[in-house]
Amino acid sequence: MKDNVGTSIIEKSSELNVRQSEIVAGVDRLTGVQRSVTPENTLSNTTHLIRPAENPAAQSTSTDQLLPVSKAVLARRHIVAGDKGNPVADQFDILRTKILREMKANGWRTLGITSPMPHCGKTTVAINLCVSIAKGIHKDIVLVDLDLRNPRIGSYLDINSSPDLSDVLEGRVRFQEPLVNPGIPRLLIIPNNKAYLHSSEMLTSREAILLAENLCSMEDVQLVVFDLPPVLPTDDTLAFLPQVDCLLVVIADGVSTKQELEKTRQLLQHSNVLGYVLNQV
Image (cartoon, rainbow, N blue to C red; front, side, top):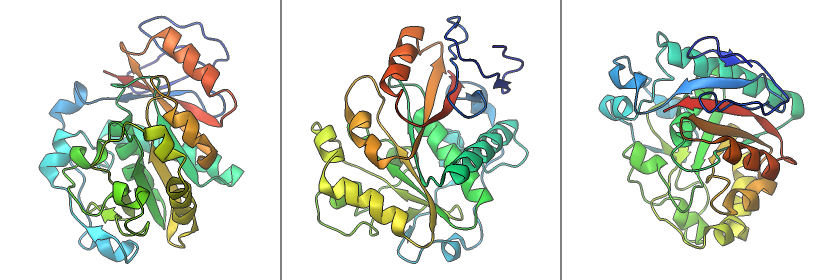
């Protein structure tokens, strides 16, 4: 395995010969580990932001709320995948193309994004990846916040919408009602503003299963992405895996350990893991 430059792809390897400064493992199917960036470093000086379309709601399903996210919020949260001139955006586009190719080849429509432990930057990666995918497809992509113990997408993007995911899981509203368009064409989000201690039970509930099934049945939706909890602290992600076609695992350089990565690989060995994203923290 060789890390050529800061945002390059690290070559595929079937071994776990990993240095602490290069927390990378073999990738099951995709092309290797995609080195990305995270909130605390190089993105902090980014000035180019996503430019929402003039009428993004026209390209979304008719049931979603239009709640445009400001440029200041996008800058603060390092959502740069919509900036064509940003090298980080280019890396997300590369990752997008590989993921879409693999999912199309297998007829998969649901992608889960997780990490071994908290603080790996998976939510930032999930949002950027979905923005990148939204640029390259002709139907909608839905991003769902299923990290029920620590929901973050709504707070990341300053989306304080009602109803939200908790209303669906608790049977108060239909699954379409919390859909939000953040001002980015073809991107829909289901945020969650309520944390659950009994999260694994909620993720295996009839409502959660029907949510996944119903989102995939929507005619205008091409892909559903779930921002899942970390794998190791609880059984939440394992509980929801039957509803997910494939996974992307985000690991953090300098934060994730070799032991965490090995244990994560063991727990996910029977899942369709597309690859690992090495996030520079």
